[in-house]
Image (cartoon, rainbow, N blue to C red):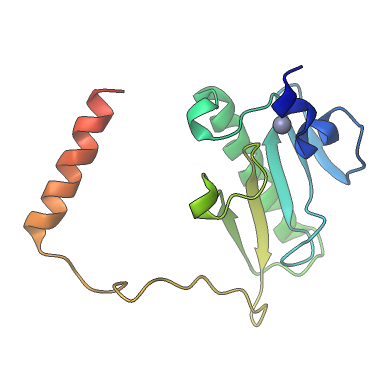
Length: 147
Ligand SMILES: [Zn+2]
């Protein structure tokens, strides 16, 4: 096992070396409750194999993580826990708010008055001119072609 895996709290959870309240598990994916939940039932879905970020994650496993996330979102709505809506949130990179460098998808039950807010910067809501959108779309399209 590599050093970054030995030091990774999620790898320790997968290995059973740290406790977790598991809600789902298969060969590739593990889901367990966040120990610092935003709302009750806040669940994390992770690949069992260590991947520090999306660039290092097998896309097939990424698909499995999202599928499990969808199942958990549906289950939360039927669980009896307060859940009037759900956010799926994945932070990729420190600047995006990633705190544990083992890919994890948050499944966050939402309800009226839960207090969670996502605040955007001062430019949010302003509509850039179409040619600016076209330039950005072209940059992304070119990057997709070179991947
Ligand atoms: Zn890990």
